[in-house]
Length: 247
Image (tube, rainbow, N blue to C red; front, top):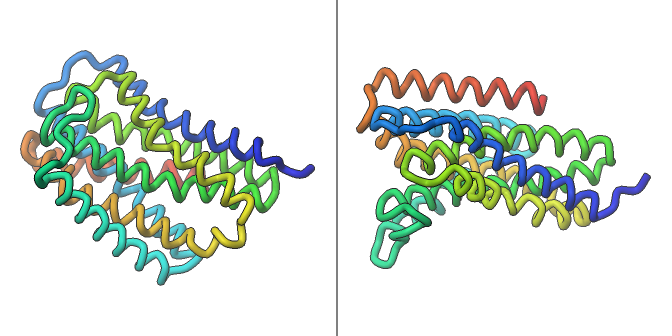
C-alpha cells in the first residue's frame, strides 16, 4: 500500500504532541527549593548529554565527517545566538520569566527545536523506506520525545512557568517534525545526505548548552557531588532508553 503525504504529516504531528507529555510529572510537584532548581538543571543537562551522544552515534554510522562539521557549526551557532540574546536588545521576557531566566528558557527551547528538525527528517526518510518502517520509527521517536519534553520542563517549571505552559513550549519545540517530515518523504534522496550534519549540529548545540549554561547553574545551588551524580544518572537513563526504543 502506498503511503500518503497526509499519513506522514499525521504521524509526525503525533511525535510532536508526545513531547508535551514530558511536563506531566510536574503536575504533582508543589514546591521548588533552590536545591531542586540545581538538581533540575543537572537532570536536564544529563538528558541532553545522553541525547547528544546518541545523535553523534547515529550520524557517525552514515557520515562521520558530516557529523563533525555539523557539531562544530552547532557550537558556533549557539555561541553567537547566546551573545545576541545577552546583548543589548536581547530577550528579557518569555511568558512569566524575566531577564536571565527568560534567556535561558529561550535557549533551551531553541536548542530542542533545532534537534526537532533532524527528527522530522528522520520520520520522512523512514516512510520513504516503507509504511512499516515509517510507523516503527514514528513510534520510537514519539516515545523518545517524552524525556526531551521533560528536559525542557526541568528548566522552565522550577523557574516559575506553569505546567501547561511548559507542555505547550515542549510541543512547540517539536513542530519542525511535521514541517520537515513531508518534504523529507517526498524528496528522500535529497534529504538523506544532509541528515548526519543535522544530527551533529543539534548535538553540538546541546553540548554547548550543557557546559555553558546548565552545569554552572546547577553548581550554584546544589553540591558538586550531587550535581555530577544527577548528570551521570540522567545521561545513562537517556542512553539506555534510546537504545531500547531505537535499537
